Image 1 (cartoon, rainbow, N blue to C red):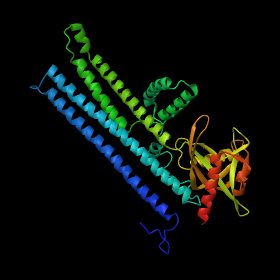
Image 2: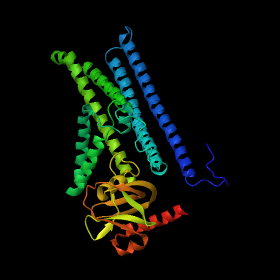
Image 3: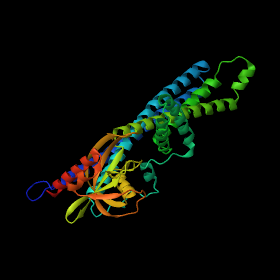
Image 4: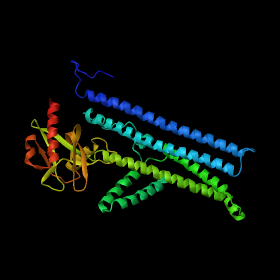
Length: 400
């Protein structure tokens, strides 16, 4: 690693932060691949164990001197049940591995975005994409929508959780909010074909084997009942039904797990981003304010909800363009604010942004550019005044 210092040995401003980001990027990258390898190794062990046990059972059933009847049934059912229990544990470990994988990906994407914001003033990285849009890896990184083959089970999970929400939230507004949030969690699930689905399929096959063994070896004396049970179509139908039930139950579990993880991420993170745009006019800084959508006499900063797949600063850039018709680039973080409105709790990060040009706004908002000595001449909320003063202090520090 190079020595980020000037001629006097003092660290160059910004270089220490850049070195830290590079170290974090290397750490997240290495941790990401180690986590992937651990998950694959765990699945390989499970597959090897299942293969060995099934091969032993087949050899036992083929042996002329081996057990038969109920003793054989007990051995087969016990072995498959033990494998199924191990499979459930493996599935839970894979779900935790997927959670860690998503966190590492999020961290890597955040670091990339910070490099674009703070170390790319010429916007040379604005169109940089390490993976093509249509690639399989890009789709996995974006957590693409699952295929239709798993939509039924994911919708089943939604119906189950919806009943819980109906009991917990009687207010119609809150209920609609939670249902919409839950639909987002379900539609944003992982694509089919990952390690979790692979383990779930093996577990479902084990359950199907248990069901077929129990049905085929059922101790019935009536000839008619025995003929029905021993009918291959009946055994296959029971096995298929058991497979579908086991597969569906595991899909419900996976959806509920990922929905719970996503909910915790939202609760612990920011809900909004604020855009504090500055421009130079006659050698003095001017800050952008827009009229409040509810109370036009108040002036506020452009802000908005952080949408899915939006990274650091993206919401602020989008909102200032939509609400004010301004193009701007993130240059620093001003601070955080938290307050409660009539409908929600707002926890937001505010970004200091450099004015770069005009764009077409999608909302009809009045605009006003204020200098530091004009902050108290208009009506604004306390959090807006706080962020403006913090931005002015930050600019003074950057100039110094």
